[in-house]
Amino acid sequence: MKRRWISWWIANIIWIILFIVGTAVVWTREVDGAGVTQTPQLKLLAFIVLLIAFAFPLIIQIIWLIVNFKANKRVL
Image 1 (cartoon, helix red, strand yellow):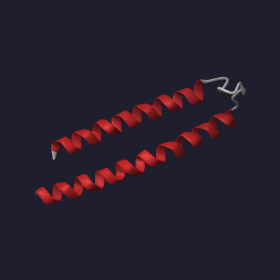
Image 2: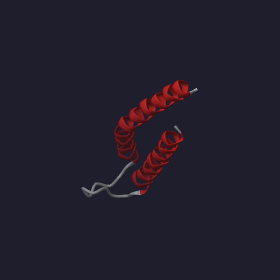
Image 3: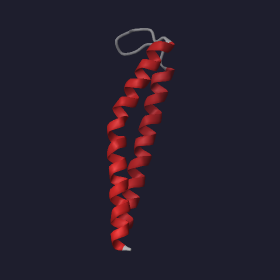
Image 4: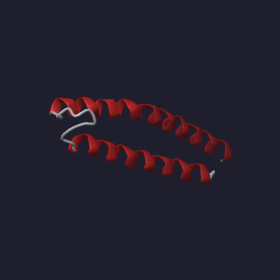
């Protein structure tokens, strides 16, 4: 039971760190990989794409959280 929660927290911390690093890269770069100068509108669009990319792991983490709660109720 405890391993499940520790794994969940470690996975969340990793995803949060990856999201923060990705956001920092998007907002601090002046030119993207294609050589296009980044305007605030393009940075916002890139950030929205990053949010969409992180929606799938978020859904998985929420399902994992629900499973952890149900498993805890079964043990108690």
